[in-house]
Image 1 (tube, rainbow over the protein chains, first blue to last red):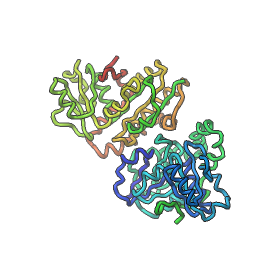
Image 2 (cartoon, rainbow over the protein chains, first blue to last red):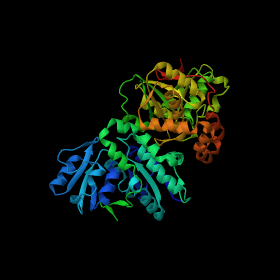
Image 3 (cartoon, rainbow over the protein chains, first blue to last red):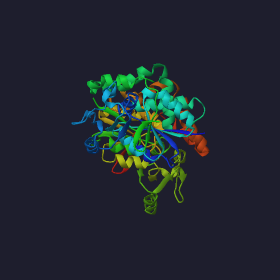
Image 4 (cartoon, chains in turn yellow, blue):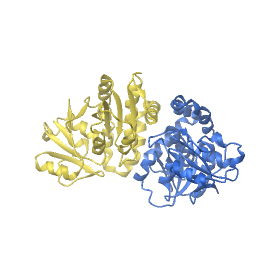
Length: 239
Length: 239
């Protein structure tokens, strides 16, 4: 039976024995990178290209790409977009364009997972689509939470727990770690009031950054975009 | 108001901003290092000296110390004791002796926390004594889970959650991280069936190592030894 692991931060990745590349790895950065990537692709972008540094994004802008991103949650000078999903909704100029993105945590999570399996992009916006895709593949699953600078983040973990619960309940998977077990239990105990639980999880973040209020509500919307973005040759595309 | 953080593995420690040494750091390795240290001291050992390597322990044996420990859960040739708390109960030869200990995860957790605050040793065996001691100090609190080879461990986390719940409920502390919030919530939702929850957490470990059954039951005993072991000059003592 395939296994489910939840990895709580990118720094933890190396301690898990991800030895083959025959895994599915779901990268999760609810506030906001993976929610933003899903939104951009659902709104017509041709691809999203994650890069590690602001300098690399700027070089690519010189080559004609649109560039998006934030550093420590703050917009960057000269960038076309921030890291808010709301920047990409019904925006004509992204249609069929490649968008380069760099963020504090999400792109780093993608980097550590590269070549360790098929990377897909998860968020509440595409929860069920991702779950159904995974079920068709029948492979070991790694749910990689981006966290915040290698610290545990509750909203990423609750998403990982939701996905774990969905899959484990089919009886086609085994839980391979204590983190996967806690993810399952956490979701199991909060599913009837998931919104309330997520609001509690995000309460402190809302207070710390009032500008994020609308983004947070949007990122906690479930199943708005039934798409499965995948990393293929360093580009995230719908495939 | 002082802050509570839960750090999920020793590898995560560096990402938390533990910048002064004016903290209390509770090291937690329920199965089994911190449960064993508490038991040895409660049964008359003068001190427990944590060391990082088997070689260092062997050198100290040559100098007349008793040595205890395990590597990957297995006893070590030539050692006086393993890492089972049951090895130390009502044992005449430990009375007033210094016992050197080396384990896979617990001693490593102590190493990363050294010089970052006052280190105390926590386990279910001394839960309330530790909580009451912390309340008297009014300092920022770091709950450092030893985990298993830098992977998340549920029993360490549930202990950290218990302590967090006890302290936060006094309204004298703030939760400083999402991990502390989840610890609080996890305990809050499981306290009426804590034993059942902990049995679920340990179920897989019991299956993997039938020899641990008695140790696991013992380590999940609450408030058996009302003592507060502290690290002072590289020795863990009651003080």
